[in-house]
Image (cartoon, rainbow over all chains, first blue to last red):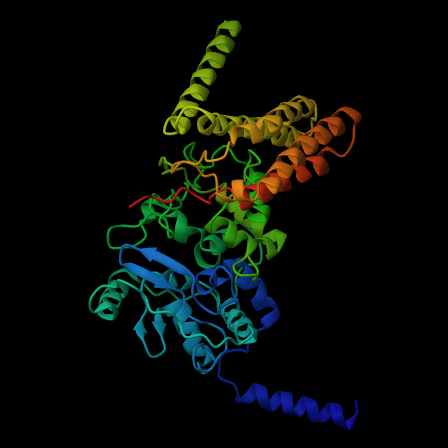
Length: 292
Length: 153
């Protein structure tokens, strides 16, 4: 070991010590989490750049635009601490704004394991910085922030996430579906107050996030009961349906990635298979979603 | 008894197929717009046979289904006459503004389906040929089909 090496190690140690109590994330694994999380697609407009904001989410409570989550210090999250970014992802509080609208599914991300969210934050910090002010939401409720605060109080039960996620098995499948990849977010219908109706877990949503119907993906005949694991894998890998038709729209975007970023197809094959295997164990719910 | 079950089963399957078809196409005007919808459904039905056969590791049914698709593909362009758009149709106007590409895609489906049938008959790489055909379906859908039917307000 040369003197130069010793010096580098000393600097590295100092840097580690001076950071906060949260372990520094690994941006390489963070990219995997980002892909599993469908590239946090609401925060990317159709043409990119990745994370620079602008994805549209029309809801009965106004039209929302994903914010800029690139490291730009003024229009993005460059000046936020790791803890502040994690609070925005898992806790529903955005720096300088207060309670987030339920359009941001923090109540599902709340179960994301500590290491996964820390790695995700490290990856977000590695995105090319884009200076683009986040677009204002349209048609929000009056006193919207108070409404979101009330919603959060009513419907959000904070739980202590795991320190690290399970690496394999059906429980990992459930973890991905419910807390990272968020199949649950679009495929579960909502109550009139916009809260997920968990009795209809994954049973489809006639009024999905883009206003279009989202299919039932439970094991019922009105869902995907006649699909096998490979059929589900094909959708998550290439968008291919069992009849060689292909998904388009939002589902295609979460598979391919938004604006050139990674999506499910860039996630590890083993994780896609784990999701597929878990979906085959989801209790059947009879709910026919009609094409509009 | 067994024959009875088979006859009943087939009859109910036919009825279901009719019911599904009627439901899906009933909102479309008679003529090329409705006919091309049924044509695409027939291609989907045959594709499903191919997918199931590949999964079962028995390429027996593949050639026949691929030949059906090949025959269907030959009819595609004729069912998209200029101006045959409709609010309930998912056909994009790009079909007519970029007709050369659309026509080339339909021809490619014909030859891809033919190649798949040949692969199945000659013991070639059926999976690779099926993947090529699927990639063509997807790329043409992405270019020329509206993602999902938007609800009109």
